[in-house]
Amino acid sequence: MTKRFINILPEQYRFDLRKYAAFKVFKSVLLANIIILIAVFSVDKYTQIKMKNMIIEKENKIREIQKLNQSVLSYETEKKKLEDVISKLSATEKIYTSLFNTNVSYFIDMSRTLDLIKEGIYINKLSYSDGVVNMSAVATNPKSFYHFYKNLENTTYIADKRFYNLTEEGGVYNFSVVIRYRGLNE
Picture 1 (tube, helix red, strand yellow):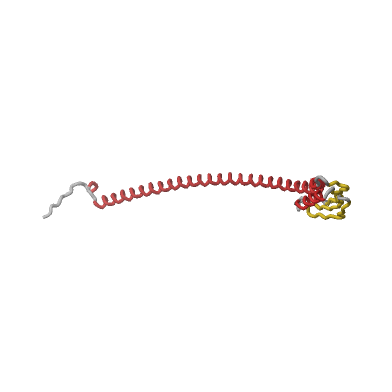
Picture 2 (cartoon, helix red, strand yellow):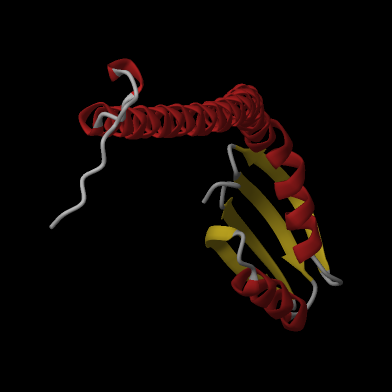
């Protein structure tokens, strides 16, 4: 025999298992929804913070690249200025070189010619035209003439030399020589 209890409570106060189970399910679902909402909002907040940090990092990189770009642009303008200065200087150098080759080479060539002449050589006539020296001279002895000839042979700045009218009269040698000097650019 089973004992049965009699519930004498009014219907509204009696324990209803269905209502109790429904209420427990409702509480569980509500709690799960609250936990899911908190998780979603937490993940969203974390994602927003992460995105803000990434945006700040990217903006800093953009600023750094812009600064580098500005410095590169300033270097490029400086380079162009220096290239202009170099081209002007090279043009000026060409002008000076051509002036030096045409105007000053006379003095250089004549100075070199006179440096070749040592003791015992006397000049009768000396002329210069476009890098060519025409000279008539007298050597008092063969040794002086030989030294003069060897000096002509050993110089690197003479392009060509030609002797004309080499004669001996009483131990004195008369000669004419044409010396063509190398230009400064040869």
